[in-house]
Image 1 (cartoon, rainbow, N blue to C red):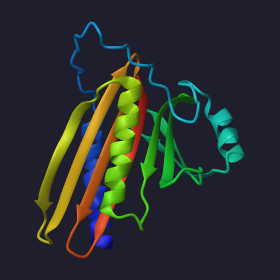
Image 2 (image 1 turned 180 degrees about the vertical axis):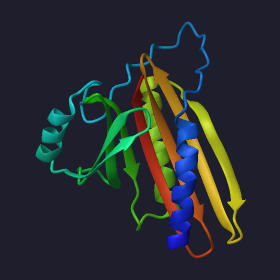
Image 3 (image 1 turned 120 degrees about the vertical axis):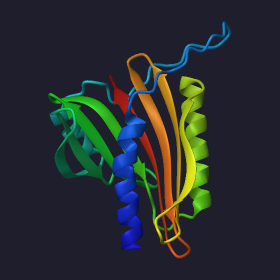
Image 4 (image 1 turned 30 degrees about the horizontal axis):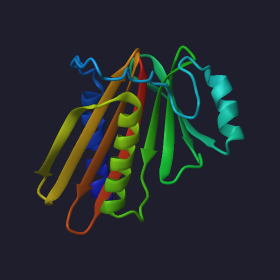
Length: 190
């Protein structure tokens, strides 16, 4: 199981930056198509929210700051756990010069079966599409990796509106005895 998690983490480290790179959105020409809503960060936050204000909101909501680290692009990541939402393992808030530029919601529960992750992914995709229109599929592949018969699956979608985007990613790595699954939602301001 440790080897499977390590392989999954390594894959995510290399995969997520590739998925998070801006994908040019195709213009959708339909006179009847509604204008998608502006993409805002979750939890009724605003882009540019100061990190010190966010920390006080986190504590007020029952969350706990579990880590801070510098990340690529001169940003700071603040990792939070304990926010009350079914299956939400952690939330990572990204700041540049003290202003909110991204939020990552990571859903993972050891007791969930694959069907529960599929249902979560479908429900989130439907809710995001209802709000922001049809998303663009940015990843879909399943492949065997390594000598241990590990099957990896990645599925991803992206919605763009105004100066922000939201990405929905499903990742699974499994062998005959173990499984590592995760659904993540990435909100990013440009």
